[in-house]
Length: 251
Image 1 (cartoon, helix red, strand yellow):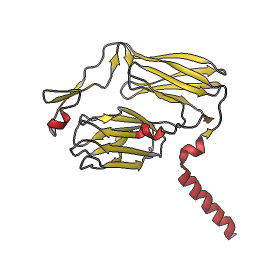
Image 2: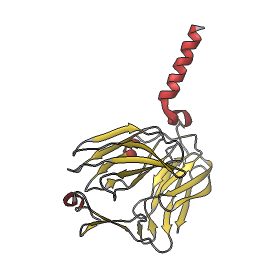
Image 3: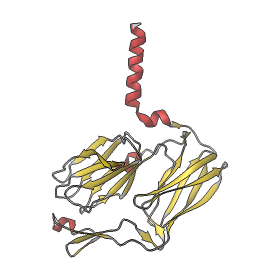
Image 4: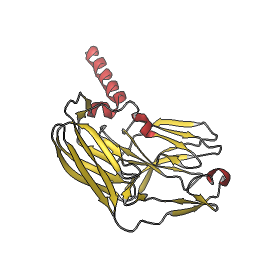
């Protein structure tokens, strides 16, 4: 009886520390994978940028590319010739396939440079660590939260008092898939982190382009998510070695 109890305890410990990603997704060899590629476009009037006055550290924060005359101009919808940036593309419902890339943790690593979080958009597996590094000679106070209904659920609030300090901690979202990253010292610093459960994702490039490769043949739902424009989805069916073109249009 004691041996059975010990095995049960070991199993529970294994489940807790193995993380949800290992239990939900199985990495296998893919020999005849398909590819989805395409663009994300924007149609309509582009929203005006939000203007913030630099109340703290203007000598450092004023070196950013969006700084002008004591202000920061932050565009939440970034478009170049109708091509939309900052969109996460994800195949939902993929339980097995290619492994996560070795540099996957880089997608959840954020750096401050001239009081700007870089990158604007990241991804991580829910429950895995997020890294934030202060590369500025000023104090940054990163705060990460998710929105649950009308409430805001904070996951971390950690001051980084000097250049070179970093924060590295697992984050477990309770509801939804989005973690918002801000800075309590500088209200114009915004990034978003989208939770994925498989490696079949992409982040649209500067010209709205994306590509997802080595997909097992089958039928899936392809999600396109933008932090302020919302979410769209498309049903796709893929055969072996197929290349499928997909375009999403946001308004």
